[in-house]
Image (cartoon, rainbow, N blue to C red; front, side, top):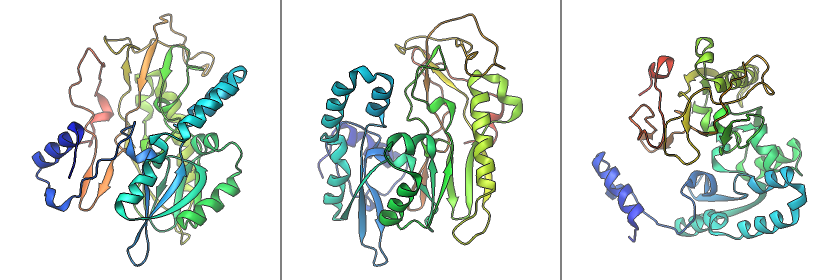
Length: 327
């Protein structure tokens, strides 16, 4: 086994948690990004337990298409950068994982990240319009669903609308907030606990006023809830929906060095009911969630977001409903 300092850190961490390292095969593959769920392999398991890997296209979270839409006058240069991206280590990672694991490679021209896919393992796939349609501007919903049926053996696709407000990737219409999120990944706000149970990120009414972004997420999750309540599983049965409190908003200065004010933004042009503050300080918003967990054989790996943070990097608030029943 060959490993880097990063690999050594992972091994030390798992060993301290009492994990039997003899049960784990470590493979270190060179790459430029550590969110391996997104640009890494999407595994399939055949009836004979043979592994397959779907090679979806990678567009760096649709960033280049987003830039082209925002800066059409620079479209040619941005497209050139996009082509370089498509040939990078990031784009080839899933193919390399297929090779080292001896998995069958299944090619797809659909652009999507692993964090934007959520299935119950029985043929139902959740999708977020905000992400999937942005990544694939030339595809219709019907074409996307047909491709999922071909490569993932999906029987039903449930389309949700939008993700959480802190997972945006834009400067406007939130005038003083800077967002560098994915644009609405499912692993931030909705997951299957089992084939019939859906965990949905949630903000209670009494917590809306704790941060201006909460009202946006509150409305989005209510819309998604209605969609899920009207949906059924692969056998036509309704889902059990469990609301999971979302963490409080994490704010950072653009340079990540000092504490910031929670009301430093202008939402008037986006949500008229939010009062317009006077402070114009720019604030970075981090994307955080209790639903971005990893299921493994006999273990769940999840974030613990109420631990102390370095105040020079981030101001953290874990109050109210965000501590209720959350480890």
